[in-house]
Amino acid sequence: MDAVKALDELIEQLDGADVDGAEVAPESVAESKPAADAIDRVLESQPRTTNVRSLKGDPAIEAFRRELVDGLIRVDTAGQLLRLVSQVVGAVLAGRG
Image 1 (cartoon, one colour):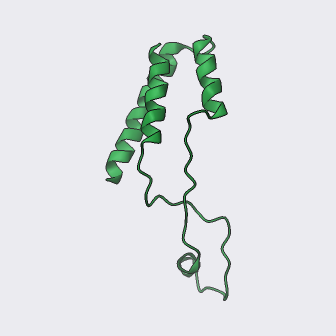
Image 2 (cartoon, helix red, strand yellow):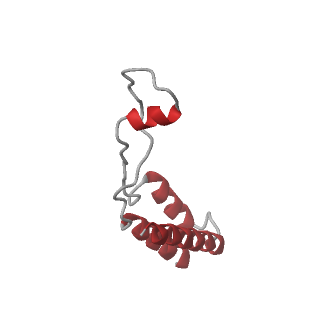
């Protein structure tokens, strides 16, 4: 099934992405003294970290795959969407290098 193959390829592409240096906002920022402005607060905050996890085996991905295989989602529509998302992800990852 073409759409399932596109889903698998997208998951593989995301799993193989190099995320070194990726950052997310910290959960909380402890301040020892009042900062002058927002920039000072960010500069004085703890380094940011990224929580990266694989989508393989994720319940939402498995549910999507099951519904796609069971015919509850149009295969052509899902395939087009997955190919588009794969192109966007590929362009974003290529731009990071």
